[in-house]
Length: 283
Ligand SMILES: [Cu+2]
Image (cartoon, rainbow, N blue to C red):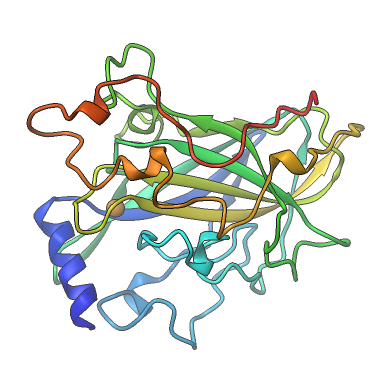
């Protein structure tokens, strides 16, 4: 274990937080298992999560991913986590444009010696969903690079929040036994084809040392329908590249959002979402 990882681990234990990502996709009522990361095989306990020799994971619509958050918005893993490259899991889930996808999150609560599969822990920060059209007949060889990502949804504060301490929708959608899940509707007029869908959670409750945490997972979809709309370039973003640490909605992190006196930057209900505007398929 590298000293740096060990320090991060201690930080997380001390703050009783944990990390994780999307475990299951409910697509119009059909459940698709995610692609597990096998922490016990290649987590920080046993080496670098980006080391070679990593198993591809099970057959799944989901690209493989690593439970640890990203801190560097220029990291190549900002595309689709864990190198962004398709694995042997070439499944695509059929989904009708205009229908709903609900994903459920799990997290690992860890001590220095054990790993327990639990549920999501973070509460502060936005949820965002992007899609990218895959060239050709399959997403299998598409790495998601380039200005190909358009945003289809974003969720911030819950109704009734009086400042950026929330509550945030992240808490009610992802955290706890009664979490509703992260729900998004595929734009109803979107042109049919193969797409990657990229779910992203940003955790703004983090230390001055580390700043915002990004949790990203991608899955492969086959969008069906008769729509003919597709976003123009003003809606397109690259990952990495779409975000900067100085973006107002990201720079907010790094001061304790949940404790002590309310800092002036948190005394607002106007959260500036990072990234491009949401495309709703009507343009
Ligand atoms: Cu975490």
